[in-house]
Structures are given as structure tokens and as C-alpha cells.
Length: 218
Image 1 (tube, one colour):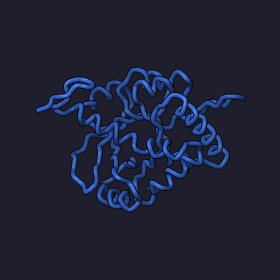
Image 2 (image 1 turned 135 degrees about the horizontal axis):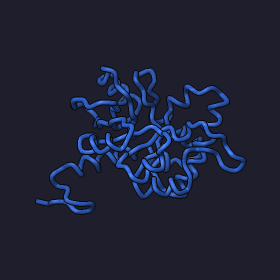
Image 3 (image 1 turned 45 degrees about the vertical axis):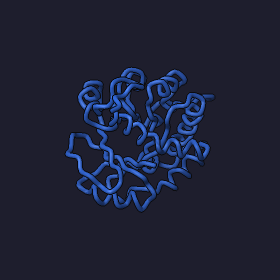
């Protein structure tokens, strides 16, 4: 299982806490390029981008590319090389009687699966919301979980913590996803999705990679 954090010159503290909280690996999410360092658990380096130009710029040097939900979500999901999109459910649209404005529809859900996009629930957004707003967000997340089950895309939850106090255990996040409607096996698979994608992206940058499904073997 992997968590995503946003370091502020406290990388070592976040790594140590991640180990205590039951994570196998960690992703450092930055808004700029930083120098890589080695730690005693796998650490992947992510970048938070805003548009297509930045995606092209960082694709060959970052392990994971994240984007915050906005007014071009469908285009981002369908046409960009972004790996993860978060805060889909945190929009200003009103819910309808039989369908919540969860940020995803059936077409986008299908593209999430086909284009290997991970839908990320931002725990910090949930935590900061008032009780009424939180209830709305939870209802939308539950709807997206149903779409996840139908279309088979990756969905997870991360802390986006800037300090160790903001982090939560892997067990707590797994239990939260289950309480929101995921089967335990779905929650476990989802919480490992970002690491699987990061490993694939790293391999694609290696000399062994030739094309999708084709690699050089000595």
C-alpha cells in the first residue's frame, strides 16, 4: 500500500511515519522538480501539474503525474498522460434526484479504465469539509465507487499530508474505503494502484523497454 504526501523539507520524518503506519511505499508529490534521494522503503516522485504542456514536460522524469479536478476533466482523462486525478467529487454542481454530481459519468469512467487513470479521493478535502458538505462528498464518492466497480478503473484514497500529524494509517484508509462501499479486496487493490503505475512508468523509461508488451532481454 502507498500513501501520497507533500513534503516541506521533512521527507525523512514522513518516511519514518509511513513505515509505522503500515505503508510499503510512499510518493512524494511536489509542484516542481527536486533531486531524488534513497530511503529504506521505496519512494516514488510525483509532480502536480495544471495542463497538457506540463504533462509532456514531466512525463519522462516523474514517476507519477497528478492533476486536480477542474473544468477540463474529461479532456484530461481521455487525452493526457496524467496518472491520477483527485477532488473530482469536490465541485460546485448540485446533485440531481437520481444521480450525484460526482465529477464522473459513464463515459469518463470508461476512459479512466481504458487510459489507466487512477481516481484519487483527497482525505484532506474530506477532513476540512463541514458536516453537511462532507455528507455530500461522501455520497458522491460512493457513487464513484459504484462506477469503479462497473468499469474497472483504479480508485484510492491518500492523505496529501504535509506533516506527520496529517497522515493516517493504511488500515484506517482501507477501512474507510470499505465503509464507503468497496469490497476489502477492491480497497486493497486500489491502495496499491499508484505504486503499480509508478513501477510501470519507471520501466517505460528504462533501456529494456521497447514498446508496450515488448522488452529487451539479454
